[in-house]
Figure 1 (cartoon, one colour):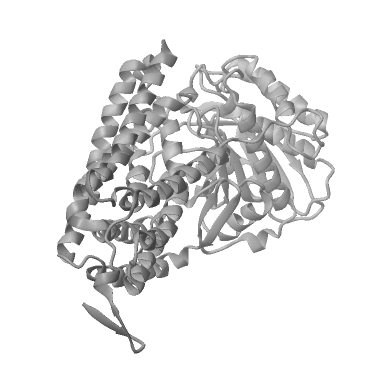
Figure 2: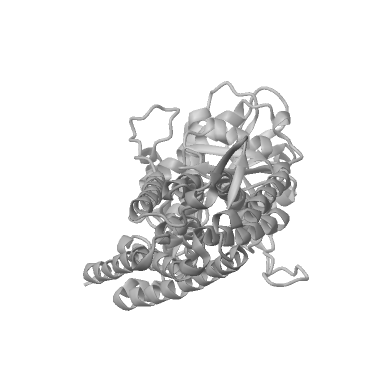
Length: 583
């Protein structure tokens, strides 16, 4: 087959290469591994600052003093004598700073969950602690809030004494500062009984009308980074400010989009329903300690406290002097952090144009697969598409097998279902899933070829782009940018011709790198969260494998099975390490 290009003839069939060599596969694997290491490094919270830190900087050591005082009384649920002691401490603490706090007393009836009629249980008396820092001018106020009650069966060191300690330190750092906007500090009661303190404030307190923006602090574990996981409507300018003001911003519109689909609530839910805008922060590491007696000082990670405090204090300082009116918006942003260092954000209005662009490039690339896969191009695409599904099924089956094996050798995982703090156990599960996915792709390789595997995966990636653009716009970035990179690489390769395996490597590398950067954080996060989410790392593993896999299994003969076998051996070794660590 010959093609004419600008008067020059070239024999395309002589230049075509349909396989890669082991070196190119190793390099692709090293790229994924390097991004995995960088991702793991980025998820480590900063070292805690001591009590000698500057007064306007957040210090985890100073915050621990307040947390220790709160948890010293043990569990302190609403209505308990222990909570009264905590309340007295917090009031005195605010007075010592220089504020004039007051307590809002209200009887509130908790809603009965699952009751569509909205019927409520018997009334509960809640005590909200409030203090105000006026700016000398009237205008919309910023409210910084956390709840000071705990569950009856745990001292609540992170949930939510840590949040209260952050609020106190911000109140202390800003006291006497020259600020443009009034700030209300609200330590709410009754959150654990159904957001009662927040409801009482919105319904009955006169300051509620002044509040324009809310920063809420929560927790769902005792470690991890402080994550911005929820915003109010019209978050475009707020997200921009978060990226500008915070040194290590961590957040994603994926969390926000998925959280909206869940039945979970925090105090921030009440404020959103009241039309307030703002942001909700929480850590989600070591979730097995959430709402248990293990939510104590011993299990609290001071580094988590430092990151949460750094993040919220920097944001509140920015909001204290921001033009509140300019932060209002009619639109949302799609946003995500890169290695907890940079926040990428763009208007949600770009979602559909980006999805259309990805589809157009993909259709063009898929129409040219025949130039790369001369024999049976349609069949190669069909087999590649099936290969994606088979690899997903294989990864899930093998991963579930690894999870079952881990639970046999690790008593703690058998009892709780969680794998966090057991790095070999988590590595065993992820490597087993990757081995299953690559084995399936290797089995399809002799029929589909490299281009078929690549193009077949693009079919499903585009389906995900379309579905997410319609139903979950905030999630779309996870699919659309890898699709654009991969489809553009395939299209360019079909134009210039694959003279060697290095052509495939150069064309695939941007898609491999981008997919790994966007998806590997979720593999780590889901593995560490564990419990019912333990099998869910299969999603990022399969997606990364669908892009990087062709480079790893694209060799001729039995050599293409080596990556799957190697990862299987890694999983076996990690299971053995888990066993020996547990005995």
